[in-house]
Length: 118
Image 1: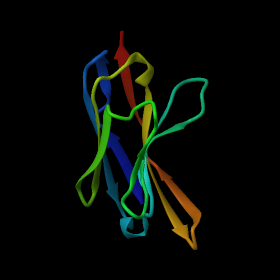
Image 2: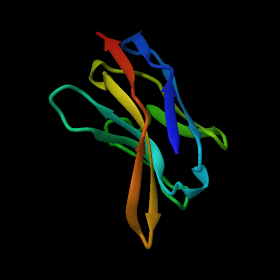
Image 3: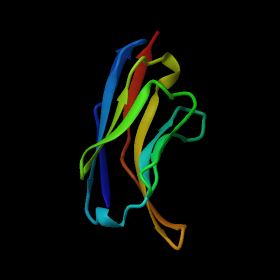
């Protein structure tokens, strides 16, 4: 499985950006999928995750502002509105493969930089 993000950039506070993740390879094995972000000096954190039942769980910090959706079977998007400077970071597309409920393999994109200026 290969993941490739696009759509990052520089935006002013209050603005919007739309990230896309193109998934290729043996995507039929993917169970959970979603977005993480990381800022320097901090651990990578979940932003929005869709589980095998289709439920999407958002981080409290982005609820009501970010929306994750599937553009098509191979493309995962993250619409980010009302952006804040604290949303700045590298955003990663993520997916995993599970067997018997246990994560067996994780897949990551290369990341895309999002910078929100005050």
